Length: 196
Image 1 (spheres, helix red, strand yellow):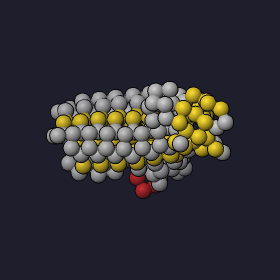
Image 2 (tube, rainbow, N blue to C red):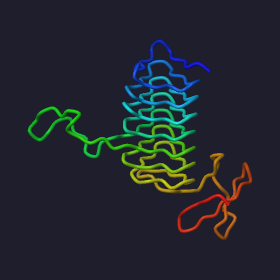
Image 3 (cartoon, rainbow, N blue to C red):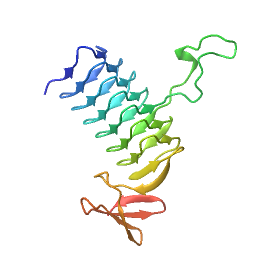
């Protein structure tokens, strides 16, 4: 399948776009960014220099994914979500001079397979969002999110477990959880959830 790039999008010729990927109106994909197959970059979204997206990722409208973020296959980033990349952001040094690229060390957000980031959520680097985890809309993530966790709030905290279908799991007791959609079972042990 061919790559689709809308005329108003700004895609660097040094970026790599996988087959079937789409970049919509006013989106920007920077130098050395890598998009896997069938990725969708929504209107006004930003993909920073060297950011890597696996296959089948979706960045919704106005999502901002700054380098050096890494997204594995099947990651969803909701509208206006932001991935930061600086421990101590400043425009100027203490002497008043403008900071340059070499004056700071970029840190990134990592999203594991199938994870989802809700609308207007902020992921403060460096953090890892676990596989199939879900970050609620408006949450501020400042620490790593376990696999299958549903986190919400400011700062984000785990409030439930979710399965691959994205639905909250049913607590069946004795550390067992099940997906109301698929019926798949999971077991929790010491704060970690794994499929049975």
